[in-house]
Amino acid sequence: MSDLSGLSNFSDAITVQVNGEPQTCSRSILLPNLLEQLGLNPRLIAVEYNGEILHRQFWADTQVQEGDRLEIVTIVGGG
Image (cartoon, rainbow, N blue to C red; front, side, top):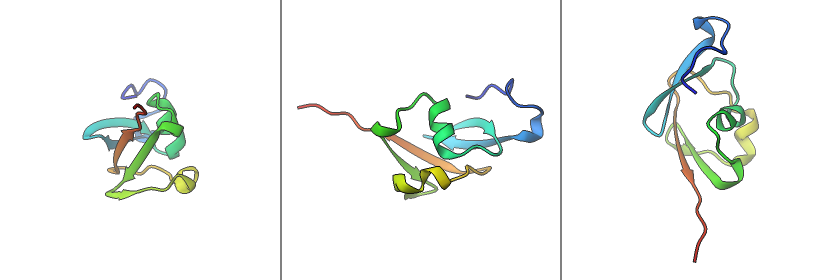
């Protein structure tokens, strides 16, 4: 995810914090695309976006911005 090779130039890149680690991505990326690039199954995670839980119904409309902070928690089932 931190590889810039897929970006046409550096100005198309932004840096966001994901679970406390800097990640570089496209400036126009939507949250579901970022999650996919991170290899996460959206059905098995919860996302905190800039300090607030972001309900799944808003994910498709959420464009990730420079400096955003995401905490992503994977849901694990068991018994």
